[in-house]
Length: 330
Image 1: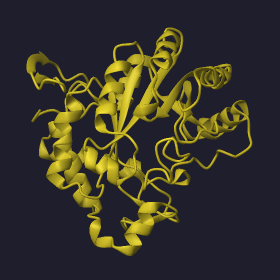
Image 2 (image 1 turned 30 degrees about the horizontal axis):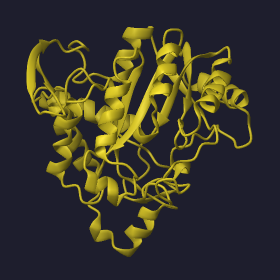
Image 3 (image 1 turned 30 degrees about the vertical axis):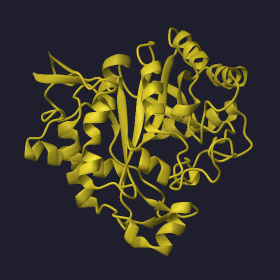
Image 4 (image 1 turned 180 degrees about the horizontal axis):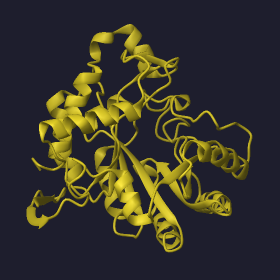
């Protein structure tokens, strides 16, 4: 049993109520895999879809050049191909993933590349419904920015969630406005808070994405985000460590002056994540701890040819050895 502390972002008032660890006693943290098994009976595998979106900080609506850390090639699966219809992408993706994850019974279309709500609602719904026509898809996951989430879109997703799996993933990246400005994000943290509150409680899953190691963020400053994130009505969170990826503005900045970056070593990152998890609200499930940019695109840090699932297991094992559980210091 732990104490759950709810923090009101607007007024700072706190209330406390007792809750149980929602994942039981076997794991030291609330994993997304456990959440999926409990809710859907097993693994729900994402199938990446590139629907041809861009971002408002790329096309000039709010900025140009995109986020300084971003190169979509660094997280685009190898099975995706340009020029294919959504149905063809899903076919190819399921064919690839079904061989790797043989026990998977459910698949969801993952609108992943760029900002997947950056279009008029009529265009968005047409794309989402095209994906949902595929007989093997049980729902959709939509990755987007907090400044591209209209109430009309949320109404549609709320209705859709009554018949399909729906997950909305919001790129938080940082809780600090100076950091968001430095990485050319094009919106402030208040916009993020507003989007999360408007999306919560509508019947679909609301997740966030947080990036550790951004320029200007000290270790303690990053750790303090645990309390900020815990005060938001999020269902899940993804953590990524900063990687300097070729073809980005940040790569050029790194080449010009590497001293402005304080990148994690692998061991440092494992220890940081464990401390962060101890501070994180225990009923937020964790989708991932780490990202894995292809070695040929990764400029720094030099972790070698690591695998994200192996590092995740190292984090889990070290939490167990140290007796650390998610939320124990919340």
